[in-house]
Image 1: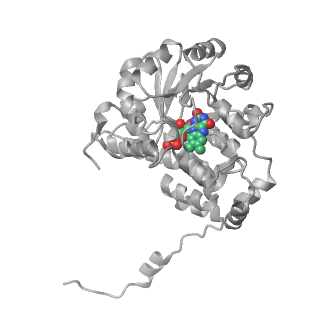
Image 2: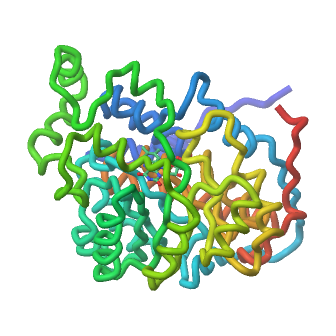
Image 3: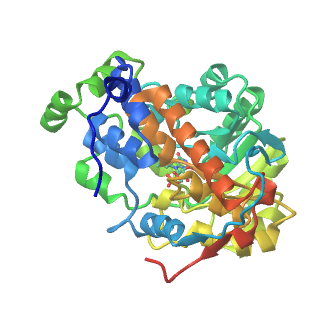
Length: 408
Ligand SMILES: Cc1cc2nc3c(=O)[nH]c(=O)nc-3n(C[C@H](O)[C@H](O)[C@H](O)COP(=O)(O)O)c2cc1C
């Protein structure tokens, strides 16, 4: 039996105290987004379908490479150790010879101003504020110089696509050196474009074409269209001098004739750190490190290139034993949670890159959305480390994780 009584007014007053109302709707939605998946949902509502699908989508029917990469993180089991003083956790680490306040960097993405007109400037501003690196894409929508201006104190990396005519790449490299970029990232998993079926089905074009469909979409996503039509035009800002249509340009950028000679050439002309992005085997990791790379990025391009590609996370142990000590091992594809980042580090990776996770934030709310995405990931990294009993990145070890193929 429970004895009942009337509640006292003072107790009711305490319970009924309303939280202060947040008048700024964008901030209100961001604050109530608790995960990257919540930000993804906000992004889906704000952006036109074709833009959301371009970002969210991957290659092939079933988007298997991305799906398997994400599932690998789910199948992972953490093995904690208790009774360590984890009241203070240090997330700082060294990525490619320089400090980063968190063990992850923001991946290069093309057409970034398509997601939100603030684009790369917003991303680099957050990277500077937080103290993590950000890579500008060759297919970016902000120039090398504009990004340096928007994030003068940020660790800026430049992602390079090299195509048959080597001259434009040489020019981009020179501009990146002059603008103080510390790392060059050569992407090598794009001999041809992946089969992005959502884009084909949506009739995706860049810049978006005005048609009856886009007109209807304009009524559904007025803010996005208003931004597009009232701000500087969306262009491949770094390739302004190139002739030809956008389609021709993209076909040229995806270069089937790239070889190890190009890695050696870049090593001879680039004074900073050199990372090869899109490595998918220990043998290739060894070849590029022998050719002078300072780091390899294990990546299936967010599942956007080869279908049924290896899961980058699962490559980490073999690549670390092949090139660890001689080069840093970075990994990306499928990261949606700070726990995913901690898992990759425990398996032996030196750092992780995130792509869509920050793009969802950008698409949802520009700079504030990117800041919220990084805040969510950082809090998850810290909480996971505390619950694992690790006080610093160095303390994370393979014993903290078990890859469990038997888990659903
Ligand atoms: C919308 C979008 C555009 C991208 N553009 C580029 C690019 O221009 N160059 C490049 O090397 N990688 C590009 N990537 C791949 C990312 O750098 C990164 O490898 C990938 O997003 C990691 O997977 P995640 O999105 O699951 O985190 C792009 C990815 C996305 C989602």
